Amino acid sequence: MGRMIAIVGNAGVGKTTLSRRLAEHRGKTQALEGHGERPFQQACQTDPHRCAFANQIDYLLYRAEQETNLRALSQEAVVDGGRDLDFHGFTRLFREKGFLSAAESDACERLYHRLRAHLPAPEVIIHLRAPLSVVERRHAARARPLEIAGLQDLPFLERWIESWLAVEPPPKVLRLDASRDDPTYQTELVPLDEALGPPAPSPARIGVA
Picture 1 (tube, one colour):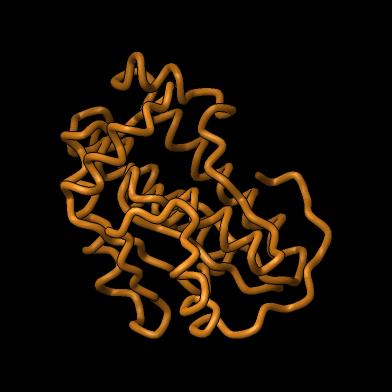
Picture 2 (cartoon, helix red, strand yellow):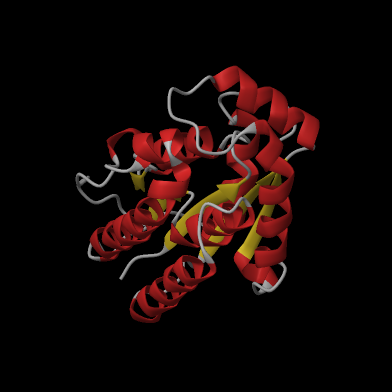
């Protein structure tokens, strides 16, 4: 079973970019959000009250399937976001906005904990942080066709992510200042390498992205 590195942070802060760069730099497999391919994502954006529950259940299972495939490689892997962020960030966001009922939110929580009991959490969490004004600007500039979290949701996501990571063991969480505009993350790769240690030999890539 290989080490898993999760890149987490607010919507638009730069998780996908760093996930790609870190995986390329260290020659590792990566698992992306795949939001454009998920069956309920478009419907959830159009009618969240009807589709948010199905969307969250699908994402929790999808992320568990990604983790299962990555763990089978017995090598280091990089995950863009991940199941913990999907639960602690977006499930809570949907509950706060009334898109999930109390019973639906409870079902998501039960599923999350049941799946996590059978699949170990990431060994390393890299938390990208930037001032809210920077995140808002980047979020607006990326102009994704599918965007579940709006600008008004970013303060809530930031609060819940901080609340989740506050109870994680400190050595497990690497905090990375992402406020500087550097689309290549070139400056941050060297200190990340030093913190993560030397990567293991690269396995063949599999279709989990």
